[in-house]
Length: 244
Image (tube, rainbow, N blue to C red):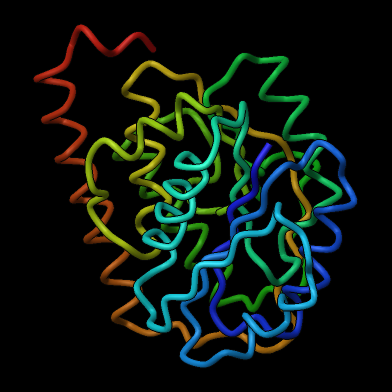
């Protein structure tokens, strides 16, 4: 199994996260894709003399979605793991929940499982009310338009099968940032893969909250509309593919 971690200024946590991941014997590869404008994050990984660790340093903020896709591409160029995890580097996504994701995807024979913040049993810690409202509203809006039967479209703690991950490399995503999380769901779902969820405990980063601005909000809702029209065109042109 492989893990893909997009990073941006994560020098405080990345080393501890990689160490926690390597404690699991079933993890055969960890790919870190770093967009930090400096070497601080990457320098924390130089002490790992482990062939399982691959670091891609891009030195520009090209978007979380772009980083994840580059990481998946790198994983699949090296090997063909049965499963691929996507997670953040700041411990908002907890490594101890990985076995639960694995059990769920195997038990349900799904193509993708999301660690959902909006299921019974889920919990969100230390999230400002403004950010929580934005997440709730954007998820409800995505549910209304995209009609994929899950509660959380925007959490980046996920597990993919090899087939589902490989599918994502066929065509570029519609966006490179936040909206890629919903774009990925649509592509996998409308190619006939089951998508399901498990509860998660989401711990907001304690190093400060990025400002929520009008541009971020407008980009999110505009992006969901783009995905909606993409999904409509796909369903019209690929009826034989859709099995869900």
